[in-house]
Image 1 (cartoon, rainbow, N blue to C red):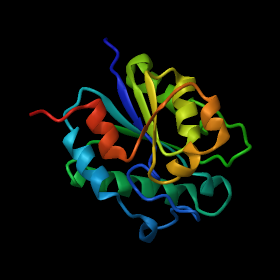
Image 2 (cartoon, rainbow, N blue to C red):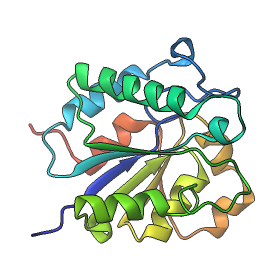
Image 3 (cartoon, one colour):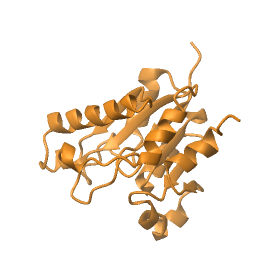
Image 4 (cartoon, rainbow, N blue to C red):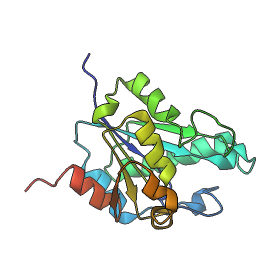
Length: 186
């Protein structure tokens, strides 16, 4: 069976607002309107669209895994109701410093998705709002990792380690990145 490319998306700071105190309840969820519209526009692309999200609030004991999974499912359902498509979602509950293979910047979630969905990582893309997203994509061997300036992206792009990483693309928001990857048809 032929391998398929994927579009990997971080969640917080990419299509919903990032929260300094974590997304702990539905009241904390605020969608970027441009992101919902952009996801609807690329509904038919021949890529698997997969969310890969670190949710350290679980590992820190701030929120239960069940609540985090339920919130994630509800967020994805809103994307689908807005005519967007998410084919799969991976959530890593590990807190920083645990060296868990699923926690970005490690590529565990992308590698697991590649195995489970028969993906060609060398033709795939990773989009996030943190250098850890870029690093996870690069470690997994994606074609291109991209940093959005939404969420934590602007601050992350200014960090000294951003200059030390292999080159990556930077975009204002998800709509701009997706328009570059999948130009609108005239």
